[in-house]
Length: 525
Image (cartoon, rainbow, N blue to C red; front, top):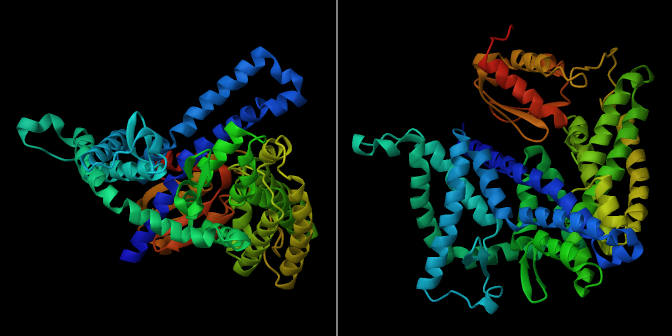
């Protein structure tokens, strides 16, 4: 593998590692959003029942519990990155990442003390410092967690089999990893402050593009959707949410780096009565209101166009598949099964899809829409749109309904014009695979393993939210037609000897079945 392709694979692995903490944040954010909305004084005035002392205690307690997660997001990223990036002994990697995170903040604190840069308590925010787990340090936020996670992962893969002289044999192997991580982190902790200002300025320079009004919104959506096929959109989202690239916002004299920190403060603490609520459209323009255009309007329009353009004899078979691909993002925010159904067979159609979404997002911003949090499901629309004041949620209908109509007619025209083989447009009589619907994951795994050259051709197997990702010895052994019998909605090769197989939200169960069969019986070819 060339250095460029190896680097690309490592970046993709890193991008996938961000999914674990984000997966935790999403449902917890739902709880935080719902409870935060229901305990607001304006909400209690409208629904007096919410003022019941017992109910209020339950809601505030749930909000406090959910708030713990968001107060320790860097720790989540340290563990998630360590687990996702490490190839061996993932448990030791996670353990080492937490130790590394503690040492990183302690080392920076020592540097600040020694150089006379430790800020007074009332000046910490202005100096980019804060309290992290009881330690005054630089506010590296998520970046600090990511650095610690990478150290834990890399030290694990490098030293988990380290052999030491007999006198120190007790500290050999896995026990050596956290010890080595401490030493490496101390060095990193002394280096970071020298470069922190330069890094901050670089990110701010990027934000000068991203934050440039409706153009920035359009640019953000284009980058996000075009990175989805490579699994790198999570990295892009993290840049906006957690770093100065997403802007720095001053609220009540406190500096908030990235969109998410400021949004948390306004949505869950200050509420609509605070003057900072007017900042909401500047924050939500990068968040879930854009995803809501996709999940609630554009993808249903694409699904309807696919159904209407399917051959009549195939519609009974494809109806269930298309409904599933529409409901998955509508209820669960996972868009890839639908996107992959036409991305690789009609990339120009995908570009049209991206332009439509980006244009709609820019219009939402111009209308000063302030809806949403992280996810873009119907539930998020109800919570963060309908249940909050002054969100201008109706703009989603004003923009979304015409966008639905435009998308439907453009996709219908394009599919027919270029005879794009979307589901149901195959000339032959098709009996669509029901293995995934029937949860026959062992059978799916057996087909997959056989179709990619058998057990001996597989080097490494992992998955992200929707895709099975497999390293192969020889990609020429892959039988794509046979692989389609597994029920996959898409197959592609991002780099040499590496295959992505799309199974949607059930992919983890497929991956587990593949692992079981690789560890156990030989698959019959």
